[in-house]
Image (cartoon, rainbow, N blue to C red; front, side, top):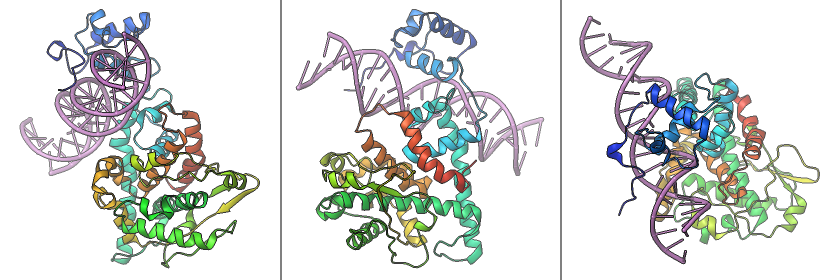
Length: 364
DNA sequence: AACTTAGCCAACCGCGCGGGC
DNA sequence: AGCCCGCGCGGTTGGCTAAGT
């Protein structure tokens, strides 16, 4: 049995709102408020509209101090940063932009901002191809290419760093326990994990080190603007229950462990912190394969339905895994609560990601 | 001038969540 | 504990307009 409709579809008007309808709705809400019941509101004021439609009209158009169009560069950057951080959570993004609605931002992103981003990547790829005429490993080639490369590199690096971090905190964690791994890993992910584990074995006792990767041509860490710092005290006191799933929707993994991280994510150094970093190299083909891989090859079949978000980010290319990584971090930090601390979110996002991407040519 | 295509944006739709009963 | 219902969210659609042919 399906869900009961929220209103009598046959007796409600659909389509664009007339000025009269707008005036009626606006006048009533300004005088009486919504009354806490959108469904009942249209009947009260004699509008042949669905309550949801009234709510949408009010929130997206009639509400005071709504801004339309004319997004500033600063707003662009905030949107990009937050999208990279948390994905398509438009309401949260909108909360950071006074006067903007989630719908407005969503439309703006889908129709313009995303294309700008993709356009840059496309252009960079064209540059790369034209410079050599063959599939090749990443080679810096102009400002855009650097920026895009950095985006990919730092995203991959985050995945690595995060895995390393989790392993350091918990030797029995997901990354050190193949029994907990998904049935099938993407080759690149397999490589990341294997290398990370190898490197970890070498690095356990060092407070600051950089380890070489397998390949020769792509230094992921070289362009990185972030570092992960572990507070020594916290590590020692860690309850060793922190692991993180590879994908944010992987609930069976998420729920199998305590989703709380001890990562210190502040970009500013904290006195007494240890500094760990790992560098790994990947070929262009490996990265492309990773970015374009299908969810089904990445997860067991039971998990396919969890990958919608993953696929949805595909076109973000290099930033996609960053998003997965980061949103996971956000999710764990928010302790599965729906009430986001927007201010800390923006602080985190701007503190790391915005800081990282903005200087790299993502001022649009 | 007529037609097609692309871009943009308002509005709709369905689902998940949470509160109330 | 389970059901119902309203709210809020993100994805999608449809219509209008501008640009291109």
